[in-house]
Image (cartoon, rainbow, N blue to C red; front, side, top):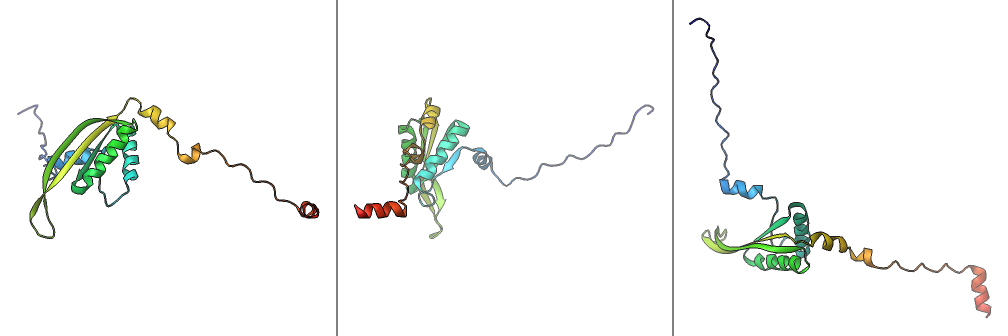
Length: 156
């Protein structure tokens, strides 16, 4: 047919196959989640990390399994009692996990606590300074006595 042009059609390219589930994708997108372990880091590592996450994202999600649940609750209470955060949501559940020693599934308790930035977060953070900055400067040490002064004191 006159006036018609041939158009090259390129085959559609299939998107890359992903091995992650939608749930895993959602989990990876949460930049403000802290998964707490009571064997890896000290308590105040998590408290300070949570403060930073609240500062950056206006909220933080603390998550733990099993014996670490008490650590998460303690972190949340420290932040709340210091006026840095308010409780937004608390979720509890059980998850099935494979016991590596016995090769069977076991149920583990899980907790997720979402804390949001309190209204007075910025003022509390600005008044909180390290102990070294609050301590008064030590008095200057007296100048060492020179030899003639020492000899004069000995004669007295």
